[in-house]
Length: 71
Image 1 (cartoon, rainbow, N blue to C red):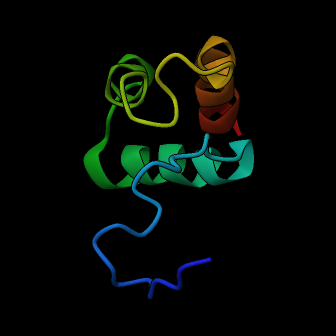
Image 2 (cartoon, rainbow, N blue to C red; image 1 turned 135 degrees about the horizontal axis):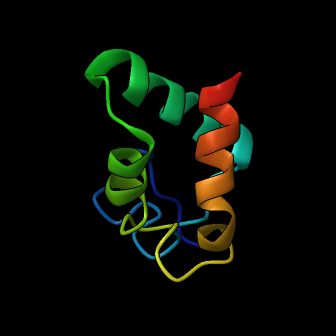
């Protein structure tokens, strides 16, 4: 098994994973706080990102955004 440092350009190149919902909640809250994005703008921003695009999390993203911003 080859060893790569975390600074290697090939590190995790083909291993983009879906972000955990807890992590997405932090991102959503940060987008709202920092840029005052609306839920629709946050959805538009996130839905096409690697790790979210064409993954099961996509169907839950709108609810996650709304739930996070209503807290």
